[in-house]
Image 1 (cartoon, rainbow, N blue to C red):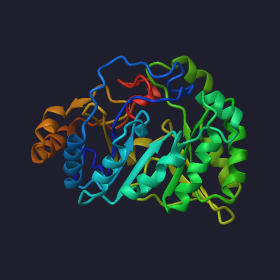
Image 2 (cartoon, rainbow, N blue to C red):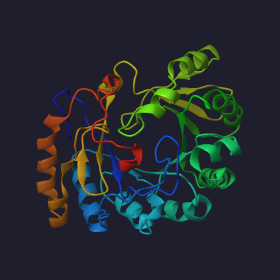
Image 3 (spheres, helix red, strand yellow):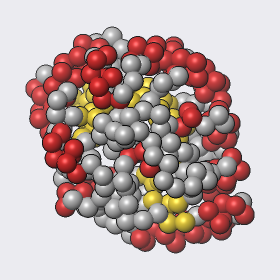
Image 4 (cartoon, helix red, strand yellow):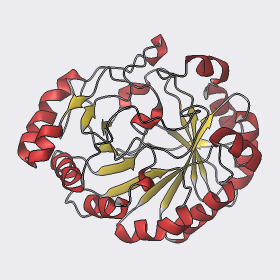
Length: 322
């Protein structure tokens, strides 16, 4: 099992397969994707080596991220590779869902178990204002299809000052009938959004207090779960999760590592730099890669230092998929 010097164990790998995204979300890529580095993304055999190495060290959950992972035509093959690796029990994809109704059946057939869809507003006009695309109804159709296929579905919504109050009210009505888990995520400061962050950051703590006052109860956290504090209510089909990276002791339960689309290990989303793995991936040497991963665990820090304004190498969230 991969373990750091603080005793944290890493059951969960977030694997980016591209940093390209076709949305222009106001908090991430407001000017659209800018190709400022070679797009030499991991090939399928390199991804196979990554997944085998992590699975052999106790990782049981793989989340495939981007950018927008569905922009890779071989995404079904990548899902199949992950799902077919011994030790991997959960395979997830995080997507903006722009072609979800056309794609979700192929992903499910390949072995997908979990789906995260980014929906920052349930109001079509607000959704378009945030993302630059009038695709909300199409994405919701894809969510319905994913649920019909039996997938576990989470909705990712970034809390933004102009929209968060309306989002919660609309979401509560939606969650009465729809069995998804809505993740409300505090906006995080990155290298290029300092002014936007200061103008739009909303704390999740008042929402937590509101949920508790309305009778929502905090659920027990699974060993492979992400960082959300999740809440359920007997009168609702869906759940609500709060991801609050600025809250006390947020990093104490960290159970995830990240590999970038170009083959660098990131010990934290906001680490100062990625640690190169590519030479070992090109060789396909699983044992050597495992030894390298274990040797790097001592470099993982106790916290992300976000509360001190440190954003590391993360210019924007599409670099690593959050």
